[in-house]
Image (cartoon, rainbow, N blue to C red):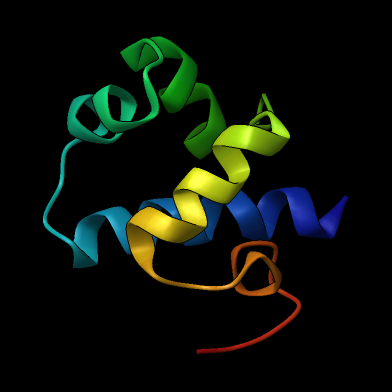
Length: 71
């Protein structure tokens, strides 16, 4: 699952670009820190609702988050 790996890499990269902690992003999503951390480690996928929220938080497309498109 190459997209799954790319998603976790992109989430980590975007969070750092925006200067946010994992806890801050988790709070914006309304989930626990551990749940968000699992997204960045590539061991869990966000729900569709949270996937869309992540794209909104980072102002990127869903395609970008999964590595199908570059910024």
